[in-house]
Image: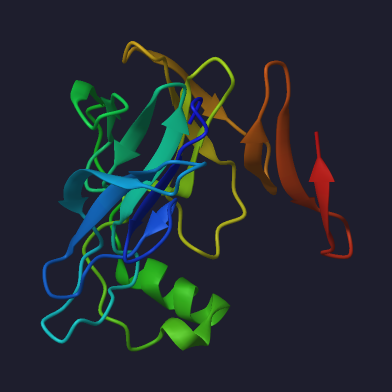
Length: 202
């Protein structure tokens, strides 16, 4: 954040926040960058867990991104982004009314072919709204990357929200490019060359 403080969560560090398996909730704190003092900002819904504490395939999770004197948060259950001030006070909620992608048997089988380790995990009936890449730019806009199946190499779709909550743009990113950072005039992404070697593309 602009005052040098850092957003952390209990028990995990942002931006991908795992919930307390007993409550499926995570506590977000602001830690002073000099003194290390931590102030609790609030408790939010984390990922979805089963009765035994196990994770779900494609389960939603809390994502947080600092911006100026406040922060953005989404829980992945709807196409919704919330803006909070530095003390954890809610400033606004922005929603885009669209359906989440259905998790079909065909999508599950394609996922297992791509990563056999996922076979056997319980799955929900739809993908989360947004992925773990939840970014901000120097102007304070929030860039929320819509969730896709883990095997997908298709075009990424990104919702960009202004600091006042307006939906500024719905971006379509070129295939095989994953946006990882945004500046005033450029975006940086990870791409693959013809030999499937990752490189940074600006």
